Length: 380
Image (tube, rainbow, N blue to C red; front, top):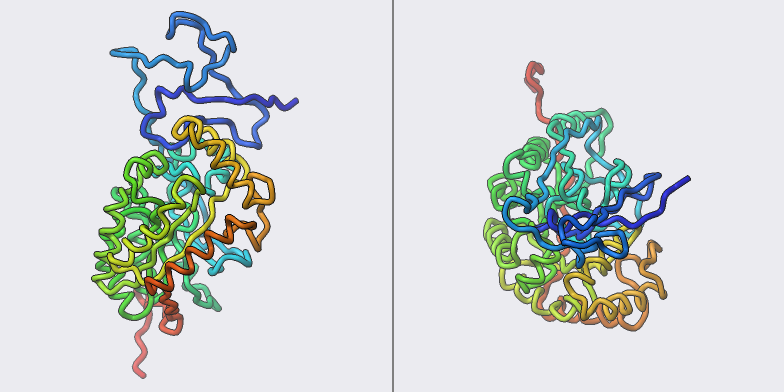
């Protein structure tokens, strides 16, 4: 018999994280529930369950340490993921990491952690899976007979430049392979760490092989820290656009996700700031709340924006046919109804006014596997 219970993680350990709970994934038969027995607060809670508001903050030696990030080796045998989604502009992508330490509360990749027997909540941002042999696997797949090159997208699921990349450098090793094969790549990230790899990306961009996008959801540093606790600040993301653009790398800004009554009023200001920093194109995506994300996002609203929570969710449902989410291919990125139409109109007016309409395509005709060690050189 499946036990269906709501679980909250001890909020004392979740400081600096995006999720405010760690509910078991949808495939688990049982869940565990924290119970306050009265030792920490001086009296037992009437409900028998601990909630964010009910936990007293312990002091001194009783204080819990912050939730630590755990890293596990992902024993994957392939690195290029394929998709046939009709509303996605690429058919292949690479994800160096599963889970993301940035902790963005709205991340649509969170439900994938349920397939690993973990929570899409705090587990998603603290129990990470890494692919240290990604470059080796990529070189093997690109060298396969009959491989036909098309742009590889990186950062479409979890961020390739999340904090652990600074130490592990898996993304950099992937870029080195793509450079050697002269293979086109498009990158999306929230991290200024991408500036580290300008030495690889700039020469690729000069050949028409690379472009990048920085996702900027808000210019409000406080809101950004609440929604995206371990991602780069808005100003540092603008700095990254400026640095990469100056190096000749075509840059886009993604105003994503748009959250009604929370950040939608900043659309024009974000696009303008990105244009001034050097962005040449732009995109947007409406907030998506599939599977467990809808509950995680509601919890986050109640804790961080209690005064706006009901209004935000009401507007979301107005754009999703009365539901928290509608997964229909034709509308999931943009929504429906008057409010969604208004957002689309504002966006298109802004990109026309700011000339954020660069539509240059990356080249695929330069692709060529490099010679392997021991290969006989051709004389003619």
